[in-house]
Every structure is written in C-alpha cells, then in structure tokens.
Amino acid sequence: MGRRRRRITTPGKKKFKPKTKTNTTKRTLMLHTGKLDSFKFNLKNMLADVDGGGAIYANILSKFTNIGFDASKEYLDNGLENKNLSTEKHGEIIDLLKKSSKYR
Image (cartoon, rainbow, N blue to C red; front, side):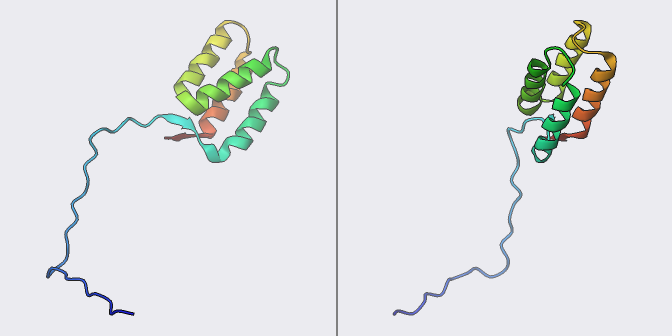
C-alpha cells in the first residue's frame, strides 16, 4: 500500500460566502404533514352527519394539502353560502384548519 498524499492547504481559514437566493417563492399556509392522520380523523368525524360529507371532505383535504389554507377556506365559504354547511360546522372546520397548518 502506498502512502497517503498530504493535502496542500493555503494558510489561513477559508471564508465561505453566504449564497444569495434569487428565485424564492413566498411561503403559504398549508397542512402540516406530521398532523395528517389526526387531521383526516377529525375532519371525517365533523362531516359524518353532513349531506355530501364525503365530497366536502375530499375537496377540503386536497385543497389544503396541495394549494393552501386560503383555497380551502374559500371553498368552505362557498359551501356556507350554498347552505351545504351550517355556520357551526364551518367554524369548527376553520379552527381545525388553523390548528393543523404550517407555512411551507
């Protein structure tokens, strides 16, 4: 086996320059994926007695995970206007969305 080569270094410490981010996107409020299972369970229980609860559940879940909090809240507001949800259920679901959200 041969000897190990010694690395030639320059005197002094190397100074690392911080990288500047050029194309950053604004962070949006979305579902915290660590709380996904508890969110699904709670949302399904809230929508158990609502007519068309399965469709509402699927739409809220997909909008909240893929698009963000604002889109899912807008969908809930439209459901409230169309008399698909009561104001009490609407408030409970909004509170659940706020509890299980995170900026991503």
